[in-house]
Length: 130
Image (cartoon, rainbow, N blue to C red; front, side, top):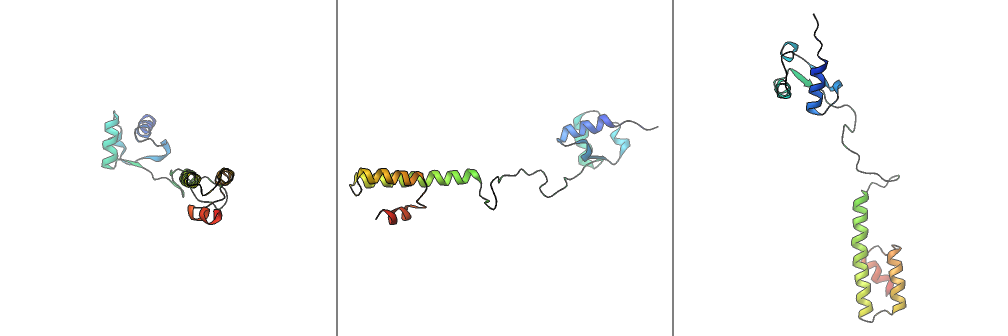
């Protein structure tokens, strides 16, 4: 007589957050007696139930890099770099204006260039301004 172990399989799948296809039974006579989730956990640790590994290259690792073509930078880090550089350059431009090294018109032009990402760094900005 063959016993239906579908309920046991689905309980094991729910317990370990995997699909029912990943669950494999080895020692069926022990599994028939399992009633609770704790029984299922004990059977997995003893080896009566086997949870199959994920197939494929990525397995279940989430893809963190979402960008175009060959650009492999993470979007969040790219934005953080932009914010750091922009704040640094705006502060430097403000200091130059306060020290009267550049006039108001030049200051506004520099701010627009910072916004347009003309400057790659503070050193690059110094080079272009002077």
